[in-house]
Image (cartoon, rainbow, N blue to C red; front, side, top):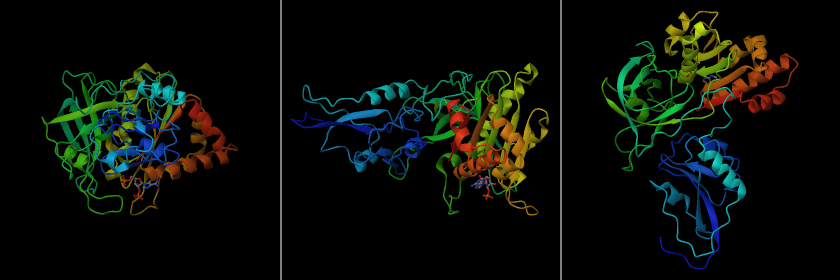
Length: 408
Ligand code: A2P
C-alpha cells in the first residue's frame, strides 16, 4: 500500500485469518460484542472495539494479537476483513506519525504471545504445555492407524475413536489440549477449508503407551442444532478415514485446560457426548499411574441419550469403583425420566460440595454449551443446600485455577 499523507492514525485490532483456528473464544469473551464471524473468518468491528483486551489472553493461538496502524477515518471494514486469507501488509506511515500503543495492549500482547493464553491459568502443578508447534502453512502430517466406531451399530449417533500417528515428528500433547485438523479440498467460495479443532482423547504418553500417537473422539455431524440435514466437513472427513491415510494436523493448542499433577490432587469431570475426550485422556493418565498411588479421587458425571450412544461406555464400566466414581445421566431411556448431568450432580450434593471446597480438587466441564448454565445452577443449589454461596465460591475456584470450562 502506498504511503499516506498527513492524517490522524489509530491502532486497529485485527485477527490473523491464517493463524485463527475458529474456536470462538474471542467472540464469546468480547464484552462489547465487537467480534463477529462468517463461515470462514473472525473479524473485529473497529467502531465497536474499545481495546479492552479481554479477548487477548484467552486466544489459544495468538491470532487475536494484531494491531495495525490505520488512517482513523479509513479503518478496514468488516467486509474487507471477511475476504482476507492473510493480514494485509502494514501501511507506510509518515515519519513521526505512529499511533501510540497503549501500555495495557503491550502488556497483554506479551502475555498472549508467551503461549500462556486461555481463560484462566492452568493448575499450579500442571506440566508445561507446548503450543503452536505446527501451523496451517507448515502442518504435521499424521498417519491414520485406527478408526473404530464407539457407538452401537444400531445407534443413531456415529461416534468414532480415531488414532493418528505422528511417526518421527514431535507432536507433544497434554491431557486437555486440542489439535486442529485441516480437511482437504475447498469450501463453497473456492478457498481451502478452515481448521477444525478437537480435544485429544489420549494421555500424554500416547494412545498406546510410548507410541507417538494421539486419539480423537469424533461424532459424525449430519444434522445441525435444529435437526436440519447438514454435512459436517471435518467430522465426515475424519469419520471416513481409512488406515494409512495421511492427515494434516496443526497445534497443539491450549495452555490452561490442563490437569494437576501433584500427589493427592482430585478431579471432578462433567461432560456430555464427545466432551468426554479430555475426561478420557485424564482418566487414562491416572489409570496408567495408579500403581504409584499418587492420585486423589476421580468423580465423573457423563451425559448421553442412551448407553449405546455413550462413547467409551464399555471401558468405563470396567474401571474399578475405588478408582473412579462414575455417574451416568441418560436423557432418552424409554423407561426412565430424562436425566441430565446437572440432575446427577444434585443427587450427589454432599460429595460434590466436599470436592468443590477441597483445594486439591480441580473441576472440568466439556460438552454442549447448554449444559454449562445447567451445571452452574446445580453448583449453586449444592452450595445453598450446604449453607454456602456459589457466587462467593466461584471466584475462589477461578483464582486457584480450579474451574475449567470448554463448551461448544
Ligand atoms: P437430549 O436428549 O435432551 O438431547 P448429544 O447426544 O446431542 O451430543 O447430547 C449429549 C447429552 O447431553 C444428551 O443426553 C442430551 O440430551 C444432553 N443435553 C442436551 N442439552 C443439555 C443441557 N442443556 N444440559 C445438560 N445436558 C444436555
